[in-house]
Structures are given as C-alpha cells and as structure tokens.
Image (cartoon, rainbow, N blue to C red):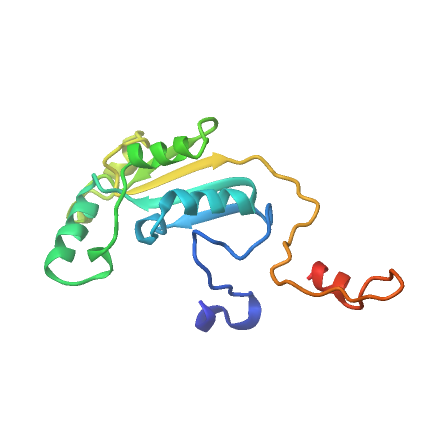
Length: 180
C-alpha cells in the first residue's frame, strides 16, 4: 500500500482485534478477507463496530464454496497463506454477529457460485441467475448497522503523566497532550 499510495494517504498498521483508532472515527469499516487470518474473529468484529459510526462490511472467503475448499486442500500439500486460514460460512459469520449482539439490519450476499474453470464458457451464467444469497458462493459479503457511541473524550489517555502544578493551575502541556 505504501509503495502504491505513497504519502497521499496515511497508512496505519495495526491488529484487527485492537484497532488504534477512536470510537466512531469512520463512517464505514470494512474487513475484507480479514476474519480468516485473525486470532479472535468476534473481537475483530467488535473492534470494527467500535470505530464505525454507521456500518460494518465483512467480506470473507466461503468455506462451503468450491474455491474455498480448493484453497484449503492446496494449503495442506503446499504451504500458502491459506494453510493457516480459517474460512467461514454464512452460518458461522451470522453466529458471531449474534453473539456480539448484532441481530437487526444484517444483509448478506455471495458471488462466484461456479468453480473458476466454468467461467471461460459460462461467464454470463452467474449474472443471469438472480440468486445473490447462495450459501455456496466463493465470496461472502455481510453488512450490518452499528449504533454510534458518544464519549466525552474520544482519544483515551494512553500514557500516565504527573501533574505537579503549583497554585492550582493545570500543568503546562497536559491539555495539549490529551487533545492529541
């Protein structure tokens, strides 16, 4: 990302289960092919909801699809990124959302129903079939709304500091550090 975007956009490295952002900082948060590689998918979803003001979108490789099965099997014989990935199906993702308290307003769909080899001669077939909620599609998309949580201080104080002001005045720089 840094090589492609350079300094045009800030790049922040982090861990999905502990995002380095304030509550409600983004309108929409997306987790694209992320849950497959995190230690705690439920915590990653909770963190995405925490930093979102409006909606979270999850994109995941489907464990019930031809493509997902092929990648997992290939990872057993030849080491790849999918060797340690945990692929999900729609029932598992919806279960995690329900455990996190998200039950209302969830929408989902899937794409790429056929094995990749079929697309050479049947490319238009998938678009002709109006079924978007196929539990066997290779890529699942799940979206759900979040409720905004208002806090008085958006950025928590991450470091302790000593206040040694005399005569009751605030210590110099304390307020400025809290605003950052």
